[in-house]
Length: 227
Image (tube, rainbow, N blue to C red):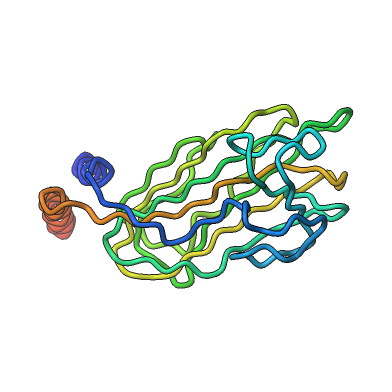
C-alpha cells in the first residue's frame, strides 16, 4: 500500500498543469516604511520594515524593487496573510525567496514559516524544496506546523517551494516571522506567490487510477486484519 500511495503522489507532482495565481506579494508597490504594520495582503504583529533595494547594503531578490525585513526598527515582526481560497484537487504551490541581512557583529537570525488551514484538510500529496528539513504532510491536518531555520546574515537569497494537493476546497493562511535578535535587522523576505494548477485530463486519469488502487489495497488490508 505504501508503494501505491507513493506512486499516486508521484503522479500528482508530475502532472503538466495550467497554473493561475491566487495570491502574490513582492512588496514593490508597497510604501517604504520602517516598523510598519501596513503590509498589503497581511496582518502584522510587532513591526516590520519595507525597504528599497540597496538600503543599508540589503539587496532585494533580483537586486531590484522592494522587499521586507522581518525585524522592524525596532520590533521583531510577524506577518499573517489574508485568507487564501483554494479549490479541491488543484496542485497548490507556495513559493517565496529569503536571504540573510548583512550587518556586522550580530548572530544569525531565526526564521519561521507556517501554513495553516481554516478547517482540517485532507492532503493527498505534498512535496517541498529549499526547506532544510522536510515540511508538509499528508492526511487530514489543520496545518503543516512551524518550520524554523537559522539564517546566517551573509546568506544569499534562496527559493522555497511547497506543493500539495487538497481533496476538498478550503482556505489557507501563511505566516512568516523572525525570533531572537531585536537589532532592527532580520531575515529578508521577497516574492511570495501562491499558484493553483489544474491538471490536464490525461493526468487526472492517472491520479484517479492511482488512488483507486490505494483504496482497493486499503480495503483488502482491513479484510485480512478482520479475518
